Each structure stands twice: as structure tokens, then as C-alpha cells.
Image (cartoon, rainbow, N blue to C red):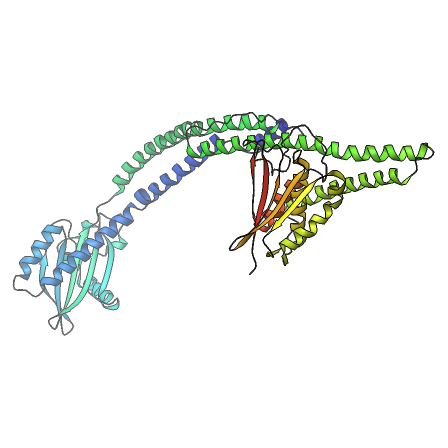
Length: 494
């Protein structure tokens, strides 16, 4: 399936940012409006009555501070007028209630018209509730005649003319028990609710329209740079690594564009290096296979050519081919992280000395000089086989790139806590713009592929993988026309 078809299917499966943003903002606006509807309209009466009862409670606490004073009656009337509350105070003596003070606000006061039975009922309920009793009572003023005995309990009368909040309290002070009644009218809020409902509907309409408009504007601001990045990402997906991503408007989009630009450069570089690798590996595989096939046909077809010399060439090329496959396998394992070091303590100097013996034939027949210098025993803890492979590949690299002197210098220098092994050659050196890439998996300094004198040409990539698996320091120092020095360091075991 093509990338274009896949992108189209993804687009059909999921809604765009514009649609989701509109839905989110509309949903949020609806939730806010619902909260306003419940709290300010549906529960308006509830909160209003709670506030009225709270005012009665505060007035009661004020009365408690001056109850029993000689100016008690005057203070009671003043409190009633200031707060718009009717007040009656009784003292309880031997089960009998005696009025000792009252305050009349003159606004639909009902507490002064309650019958004895209602007063007794309020007292009993307050007594049963630890001296605290609040009640919402409905009254019909047609039955208020000024005679307490003719007053009716309004809970049975519909519709009610007034609704009052009654607060009954019992308190003991100075050895006397007081029964305090407070009363205030609960103003009907139905007209207020209707006004708020009309205002709410207009407010909801404008808020929803504003939310939708704002969502479209905001989504356009956000989606436009993302759409541009997506379009360029499609070109990146089909192999166009020159796409220049631009991030505008937001820091996150700018960071995304910068990341994609970096990814495009890295993918492009990797793609080029992979192509070079395929070409180089194909060359390295083709050469020994061609020679094996050629010499095998000669030995088969020409009398007298079936000799040890031709057989040795076939064996050498087979060995080179096997080493190449082995190096590719090792490189893949190191890159995948499946090849782990198995540390042991060994002498790095002795291991290097043993490695030098592999080059005796090269030294005798080809004139190479491989010099070794050490400051003595260097005990380290690492994977012995892997470090042997590192030393071998570094020397192979130096042999392949050394100059006409055919000289390679291997040295071990001991520090306080670590040991450094260096391999130097007298080759052409590496230019500064290429030195950072020589450890990369697919990189070659010279783009023209030449067959290595020894090894497979993949040694430095393997060296990098092994040393990083050990957490070791490594590097290269090089100057054009002078040569290169490759080195690595391992901690000493004391």
C-alpha cells in the first residue's frame, strides 16, 4: 500500500485538530453553563435560605452577649430594627415560659402571632436537638387576627402568602434558662429566577457562538504549521531528505521542526552510507568468490594446475570471505546489543604481545615493521576476546593505511588509574571534517573502495561497538600528511 493511501486512510479514521478543538471547547462551555444553571438558578432558593438562617444565627449570638442586661429590651429592639428580624425572648421558670423581651421589625413578623401550642412545639424540638432548632414555615395572613388562639399552622394552607425562617434557641445564663425565637421573612425569588433564566439563555447563546468561533480561529493557528510540517513529512517518507521543516507560532512546533530537520539529515546521511556499504560489501564478497570460482575452474579444466599453490589461494580467499561474514555478524550483534562483554582480569600488555605474533608472516614477506612498546604489566578487567578483537582491528587498520615506511607503532602507557593503548601509522592522515565520522558503521574516508591488505574493512565499526559496550574511552588523533593514532583506555585493576 502506498504512503499516500495510508495517509488518506488515517485522515478518514480520525478527526482533525479543528474538529476536536471545537468539540472540546463547546463541551467545556456547556459544562460551565450547566454549573451556572445549577448553582445560580436551580439552587438559588437553597443558598438564599441558608444565608437567611446564617443571619439569624449571627443575630442570636449577638443577643447572647447582652441577655440579662438592664437595657436588654432597648438593645433587643435596636437589633431587630437593624437586621430586619423579629425577636422574642422567654425565661423558663418551673416549666412556665415568661416573655422578658421582644424586638419587632414590623415586616411580616409572625413570631409574635404564634399560638401557645406552636410555641410549645418549637420549645420541645429545640430541647430535643440540644437547644438548636430551625424551621421554614409558611403562613396565610388571612388567618392572622391578632388573636394568637386563632392563628393557623401554615403548612396546611395553600397557597401561602409568606414564608418565614424561624430560629429557636435555648441558652442558660446566670443560672436562668432562656428560650429565644428569631423570625425573618424569606422573600420569594421566583421573579428573580425567571429573570436569571432569560439572562442565562442569552448568555449561553453568545458563549456557545463565541466558543465555536474561538475554536476555529485557534485551531487554524495551531493546525496551519502542523499541516505544513505534515506535507513535508510525506515527502520525507518517500525518500526526499532535503525537506526543510519550518516551525512558527509555538515553541513546541519549532522544536518538532528542528527535530524533523535533524532526523531528515541523519536519515539522508544513513541512506547514503547504506548505499556505500552495499557497494563496498558487494565488492568484498564478489572478489573472493570470483577468485575461488576462477581457480576452481582452472584446477578442473587445465591439466597440471591442480596443485597446492592454487589450492592455497582458494583457501585464503575462503578465509577472507569467512572473516567478512563473521565481522558483519559481530557488527550486527553489537549494534543490536545482543553481544555482551564477559569481564575477566588479564594483562593487557601480554595480550597485545600475543596479538603481535599474528603478523609474523606479514612482517617477513611484505616488509612491514610493527613495533611494540610497553611500560610493563597492565592488569585490566574486560572481555578478553573482545579486547583482542579491538587490538587486532586497530593494527589491521594501521597496516592498511600506513605510508611507504610500512611502519606501525603499538604502545601501552600506564597512568595512575588507567592504561592507554595506542596504534599509530605513517599514512596520509584524516582531514578534520572527516575525523568525526570514521567510527560510523558505514563510513569510509576514501570513497573509492580499495581492498584491504588485511582484514575486512569493517574493523573500526566493530572497535567502536566493543569499546562502548565496555564504557571505555577511545579516540583518534590525526594530521593530514603525517599519520593517525588510534587509542583507547581501560581502568587498571590494582
